[in-house]
Structure formats: C-alpha cells, structure tokens
Image 1 (cartoon, rainbow over the protein chains, first blue to last red):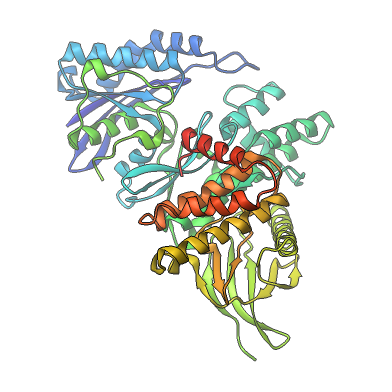
Image 2: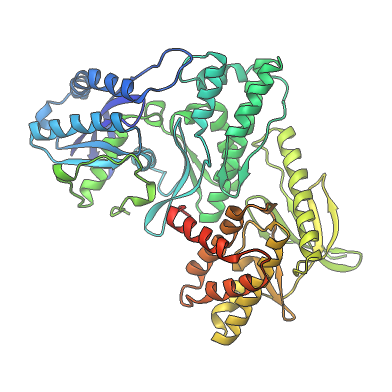
Length: 331
Length: 208
C-alpha cells in the first residue's frame, strides 16, 4: 500500500511517500521545505502558513515524481491533524483534503507526536516498544505505550528544548533554528559554567536555564563555554527523565525523535545511558527525525490498516491534539 | 562482617542492606552517571543527598515516622538509615478489612497533612513508599521531595497518591476519601482549597 503524507504543524511543510509492506515502512520520498524567519526573529504562524501554501503543490508533485510513482498509485492520503499552529495545520489539511477528493482516495488525519514514535518502529526492525524522547522546538515529551495508549510520562513544564535554543539564538542574533550553530559553538567549549538544573520527577523546565545563559552572555563570559554548559545541562536533564521513564515503564528500548534529536551530543548521552541500563538505543536518519511527511504517511498507513477511517467532514484539525487522545487500535 | 546486599536498583539510586556500628541498616547510594559531565554529576549527587536527608530529618521532627538517619555522605551520595522491617502498604492494603483499611488511610492523611503543615513536599507519595511496621506508618524515599508552601504543589503531591490508589487499589475506591478525611482533620489551613486544587489538576488532565 502506498501512502502520501502531508506535514504542516509548524515551520516545516513536507510531503512524504511511503510503501507499507508486511508491517514495515519503506520511504520512497520525503521532501522537506522549511520556512525560515528573518534572522533574530521567530516563527510567525501566518507567514509560515503562507510559505506552506506557496510550496505545497510543488512539493506534492516533487514527492510523487521522486517516489517513482504516478499520482493514481497513491492508496491513502494522510495529514498532520495536530498539535501545532492553527494556520499551518489548516493549510496542510486543506491540501490533503483536496488531494484526497481529486484522487478519490481515503483521507486520514494523524497525531504528529505519535508519528515521531511510529516512524522509529516502522523503519528500525529491532525497535518494537521504545520509550521515545521527543525533542523539538515546540515539544519536549517522554512518550511510551502503556495500558492501551501512548502516554506522556514526562514533559517540559514551560518551553520546548528547541525553543530554549532558538530563544537563546535569537538573543545572540543567530539564524533560526539555532541548534546546529549552538552545537558547533559548544564543541569548542572548555569550561563548565554553572546553570540551574531543573528536573521535577519526570518533568523538565528550561526557562530558568535560558535566563541564566543570557545573563552569562551579558557578563561577557566566553560564548563557546556558555553553549557547552547549556547543552550539557539541558541534555543531562533530558537524559535523566528519559531514564526515569524507562525504569518506571520497565522498557528496554529508547528512541530519539524531533529536530533536536539530530544533535550528536544528545545522541551520545542517551546512548551511554541506555548502554549502562543494558537497553537498546535507536535514532532514525535525520530526515525522519525532523518534521517530515514520511512519518505522517506511515502513521496514516498504520492507522488505516488497523481499521480506522475518517470522513472529509471529520478531517478537522486540532491545535491541542494530545498524545493520549489517540485511539491506538494497532498495538 | 556482613557484606552489602543490594535490594533495589532505581533509575537514580541503589538500596543496600548493610551494617553500621553493628546494626543492620539501609544505605541509599546515588549512582554516578557517565552520560553527564563530572561537574554536573557530582553537584547533583551532593545537592540531592543533602536535600533528601534534610527533608527526612525535618519530617521526623514534625511527627511523621521516617527512618532515623545515622550518617550522610554528600560526596559519595550515601544516606545511612534505619532499616524499617515491615510490610509495604501497597502489599497489604487490599488484604485488610474495610475498617482497618479506613484506619490506615486516615492515618496516611494525618501524616501527609503534618508534612504539608511544615511545607514538606514528599514528591512521590505512593503506597510503595510507605511501610507499616509495629503499627506505625513509615514514609520512605524523599528523593523527589522539596520545600514549598504553594497549594498547587501540595495538590499535586496528593494527586500522585490518588493516582496510585486508582491504579493499585482500584477495587477500593473510598481509600482516597479516607486519606482526605485525615488530611482535613490535621491540615492547618483550609483543606477545601487543596481539594479544589486537586479537582483542577484532574480537570487539566495531566497525563500520568
């Protein structure tokens, strides 16, 4: 079965085409187009939605061509139902509805956060029942399957970790997203500068760390050292809550997802933690970690195969679509 | 010389049965984590060990049964404490008759209120973290605790217990009501405000 998925929860418009074959996911194409705000500013929801509207037809065509299929070969159209920014979600959903009607193929809306987890299970055969550390700009959650649902065991109490980096980046006048540049600066850090460490049970918080880091900049401390300390502190906190969730749920696999999951230092820390617990560590390829259409397509296929159906009338978006609201019929 | 015996390994610490001045004791040892840099690792272990010991000592001084602390090593992160031999409330609550269960729950409520009267937040009040020994209910594992006068945080503290009841003792839905009876009796301020807070927390639907 071939599914085309449209992602549009925030800054990224993406279309992916996947083929489901005996429970495994084969990515045929995954075209990603990122809206980039001006240097020193953040995402403007309407402008991001305008970007998506401008590129969406082109990337649908590009994804179909790159997949080496004809548009009639698409069996199912999936889209990101939420959570995310309203104008962006509506743009992606509108495109998906139009495509579904035009191709006369079924439509299905999926939860973006669950898609980050399911894509790991879909493309990595050994990854069967992981705890997902999902780290992106807007979201920071520790998700695992328990008692019939995907549940959030830990999450940020204020801002997402990527947002913490982006805000710090904006303060420094760095380009959006700031994570890669912070990672580069951090690699030249030599000295640890004290920052507040905020873990409460299985939850984390970042706004205090951000304020402190900014204060260190103002006081003229070496930028490389601040970035190094920032990364070390927030990643240690994230790794700790992930380990707690693994102990709590008694699971032996950990999966990374989200844009921040591309950070090599975070990968190494979570991998070390997993190794010490005798657990397995998984991280999908970069294009499947960041927001992407392939993961939306894959979750759509998984849901459709479990018997879930959605009419055009029901294909509304949900900005506050929570992870544990998803009815899981496939596990 | 009795050798240490590990009886439990958590995400953060190991629980050993050991000896101290000829007594059989519990040693809670926080483990060093190689994923984090030395500076963060040692400061976390030191801070948390110190904080936990402080909370336990304070809890004891306000009339709540907790293990006596014999020694605190903040460098290696070890708290040496009394070995409470008894039954976890988790394991016995479902086996009691309703009158006994009511009595235990009521007394749990009294103790939690005593903690909250002194702004001590346990942070992980579950029936696994209470031991019935010689008729007394001991509270253990203050590892996630803190000090706070915020009623939101007190509400969350009680909500954790409510969730523990509904997952582990779901056959006896009155347990939390008994706890709250005891809590209301002992709590120094208006317990109804805490109750409202708990309702709010439930409505908000925090996921756990």
